[in-house]
Amino acid sequence: MRRVVVTGLGMVSPLGCGVDTTWKRLIAGESGANTITKFDTSDLPCKIACDVPLEGEGAFNRDDWMDPKESKRVDEFIVYAVSAATQALSDAGWKPSTEDERCRTGTLIGSGIGGLQGIADTALILHEKGPRRVSPFFITGRLINLASGYVSIQHGLKGPNHSVVTACSTGAHAIGDAARLIALDDADVMVAGGTESAISRIGIAGFAACRALSTSYNDTPTKASRPYDKDRDGFVMGEGAGVVVLEEYEHAKARGAKIYGEIVGYGLSGDAYHITAPAEDGDGGFRSMQAALKRAGISPSDLDYVNAHGTSTMADTIELGAVTRLLGNAVEKVSMSSTKSSIGHLLGAAGAVEAIFCLLAMRDSKLPPTLNLDNPSVETKMDLVPNVARDKEVNYALSNSFGFGGTNASLVMRKVD
Amino acid sequence: MSDIGERVKKIVVEHLGVEADKVTDNASFIDDLGADSLDNVELVMAFEEEFGVEIPDDAAETIQTVGDAIRFIDANSN
Image 1 (cartoon, chains in turn red, green):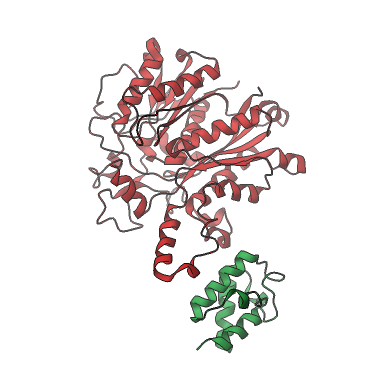
Image 2: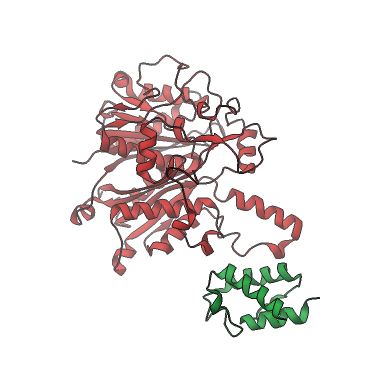
């Protein structure tokens, strides 16, 4: 199998537009959580979210990334994806110019939900004004694979044009599947990741209805996302996109590209248990991690850092149990943190954004913290990097993503010298 | 007529993102203003909304230029 490395990173996050801005603020222990102001929350049990900043540090300006004529026709998840993909391609210095280069460069960007806001808005138009008022761009601005579609069109990428929809595992599956397309010689370069923009009245109402969101911290939003803490009560919804440029190793070396790390392991599994809750014994997550390590050809003790799924829900302890079981005696050597404590849960974008954090942890020998971890709900010998970032050399990192429907994905990344 | 013309041109500028001076009566949506078939559907919907007229599909197909739109609306609006 051909080796696959990461040569470009792009991100839109609740800590700002851009990888550097986000990483700097993440390491500084900042939170992206705010009181929701863009729609009425008076009748919603959850009134907070980690939204992408539109002003101040790292402000996101949609007109910087897409022609306003196009961007007004699509939901925000597509604009976020185009932004993150454009950043990643620029970071990688990869601008396919020949027909062969274009045909060997593909896209695989997913989303958990896609254009929720646009679907909700159009349903009202249909109801109030009838079908003749439904926009010809209603479908194309909401379809999940149109994130890949727009990136492909905007950058002239004619290789595989693919997408993935696996709830909160989407970003990890997208990167894992795209890496396999390169390994199997279907492409030399893939622009891969996840994107999400579900912070809307209907999105908050829906996730609150299935009792997934934090509702006790409406007055102190930055305290709400607290993975592993005994006072956690649900996740805080985030939004944004994470996109990486994956590249075949020799292809990257030949053009002198900088290499953030190698995708050495990818594991997938299903819980076959419940639509929202993970199996109590954490077996699905365990098998996903185990499969990723097997593919990487390393033992659990080789890991230095795990970026947890850790959503700040009851499921945190199940994941911690599975990781503890996986690590065995190595549990004291490996550190694990949940960056959702800072940026919230980016749903379909989470796995991609968190894989990028693993690569940056490797680059800078720096572990991002788990904020608000004041009183762990269970005893553990594991270092959960509470509240403050920590220096640590990272040669191997694992990122977990678990989604509704019982879908699990784990990625293992390795530092390349 | 001139009022309708100005309102039609304003809609065209907004929806197609083109310079106002290119939106002449003789300008073809597709050939001169860069529209595609979906843009045309959206434009017709915007005209219907703005002027309270119904533009059936067979009539919409005959509206090729800015002037065609203005003439149709002028003849069919109250």
